[in-house]
Length: 199
Length: 199
Image (cartoon, rainbow over all chains, first blue to last red; front, side, top):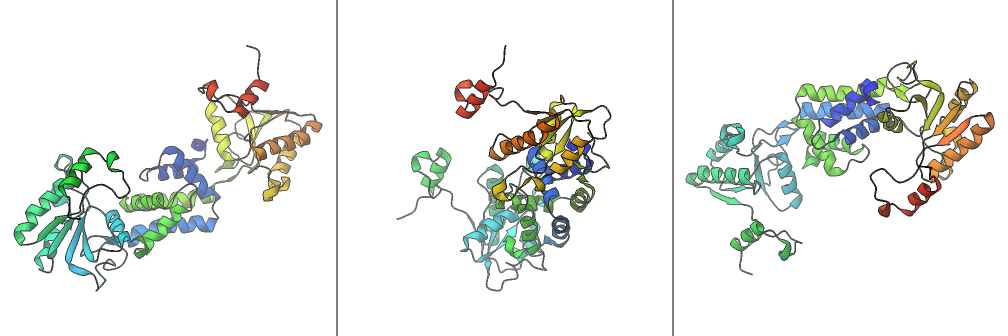
């Protein structure tokens, strides 16, 4: 039927373009919009336009922001000598939820993947180097995923930045809190063993 | 972090208002919007406004449409003597997918639920009666769900319409095609037994 109600089909198609939304969910969302009051629907449409218009990259750390600087770079109390390098803004969000990290960030907007054409010049690496050249940064914490691309990126950054006298570290990998050791996979267990610490 | 990027938090909140979308999915969708081109985002926003503006109820069957009459009521080849009564437009969509039903529809926009204040006057029942009074309708197929409200609605319609000389039927309930009989629940099995037919 949706095919016959053009504007409904079109709206559901738009929802289907969002990441991780299937055909049935998209149609359910389109129906949700029809159930809204006209004011709510207009506010929804406006929120899309606003977000797209207002959000840009922070000129310092390349994170998303709708202000001049992002709120981390704008915060005088954050430690500018430590920079956590992440692949995307979502990782910043996850790190900030811990409420422990007091340094700043640098968002690469991707990870190295030469096979897919993602070479260092496609990432925000020259912006990172520019920050390093200002001399304030002492430690770089590379927080990319533990997959091939994430590891490659970490390795690349370590080789690039260590000669400049920076400490380059990586987040610890090991058994997740709450996981039974007997159910941990071999790779994780190996990492946990290699990264063992004094009690 | 999203709390600090006001327009992102606001957009994700808007997505969260859609049926069946949780907090994490809403945030993922908001990020998807940021990944769109400005043109795509504008088209998305416009689709919401358009759908809300253009889609209204068909004056005959109360189904959703963006034309004067819905495409079923507008279709001269559909059998106007049979009306399938459904609770919402989604059920029409499901019925139309079968491509077998050649009659018309009537959308009640809900089911009777006196405990929740949904009394007959809250549904599009007087519109159905008006259609019946025109004299063309011979059979009413009640296609409401097999739950308390759906059954109550079917019963109510049967009592209302049978005295007017109409045939009132209900969709057959039984074992789903593809279900092993041993796994069918008791209620379904009872329905299947009661509704048994000659081979």
